[in-house]
Length: 154
Image 1: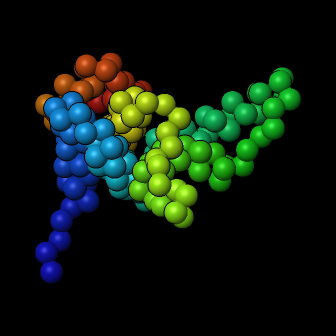
Image 2 (image 1 turned 135 degrees about the vertical axis):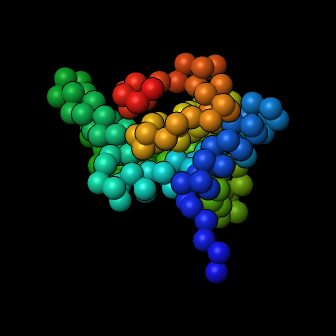
């Protein structure tokens, strides 16, 4: 049996996601590649005992909800529901639960959603302190992507 590094696989997916989006304008392909990379890297981060970008996003939304609940009376969502909302774009693309579920449903246009999913994968790269390839650096510079973790090692 031949083994392949999941970090290297994730890096390949991120590069491919950027190329699909930027060079070919295949946004759904880019979203799927970026989502898989983000999930792989996120799992590696959690296994290492750190917090991945997805968990950070859920934590941030949980804190925002406390404020909106207290000051605006808005109902709070459970962490499970917040995770479902945050993952709804990628899941809408890759799952079809019934005959009535034939269209992907996105909250924003596909160009923006694909960029955000790539950015999420890049944030996990930064948490792992993995240096950016030329392709990733070009994307980061073009869209002014930054994270606190990136500043620590570059």
